Image 1: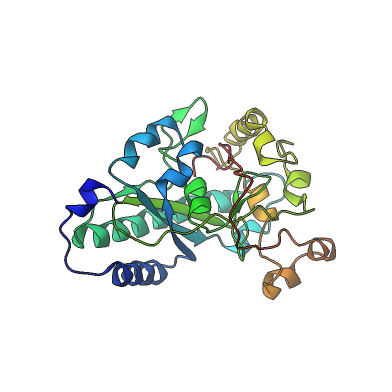
Image 2: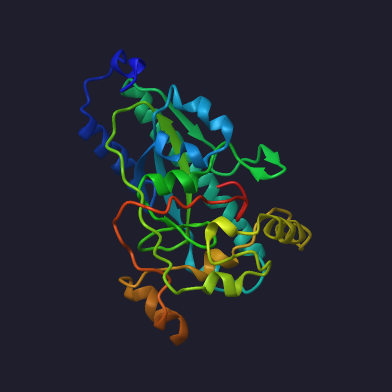
Length: 276
């Protein structure tokens, strides 16, 4: 606990009660995932600028919002105009959810900073203020897959995330171990051929070039793709999603969920699906 935290006046709400309020607000807003990360856990994998946040914000609340299967399923080798619209609307909803969470934290006497869900602050390489997927990993919401996307135990990569930095003494999650197993669906489908056996070897340049190419597609105009997001959806314990996959996909589930500490320390590499 920092000196700032010990001196922070609160409204008398206990950390447990505050956690429950935040969870309820997230669920009421449609969030499919909620967790808390220790910022120090993620700092080695965040941009250098993020170190400045750590002094005032030792924790990060991370929310995930589920993308719609009906939008993702038609994607083959490039983004569709419908996905482009959906992508923007989900980012807008995440920003609204983050503002509500930040307001609840601030009204309880704590500092809070809602970080935009998808705001580009640098294009060489493309990145945002921080990586929501890295903080989601640190919060225990999923593991980092070969595609460098955060893979949720139930929803796979079909979530987008947003972060609220805070000094509230909320209980922190623990990272999950990588569980891609022998699944290479994302690598086989990647139109840029950027995905390798290990996430550390992800070809950022190839992905960026393909995303830039996609910006010239009619009614797209943004660095998005959606192919790897689509290929990693649903887990082995989600019969609804497993039944809708092809026989080949169902026979080789995208991952095995294991609630263990990540001993590999895999580092996600941007810019897959832009700053997220």
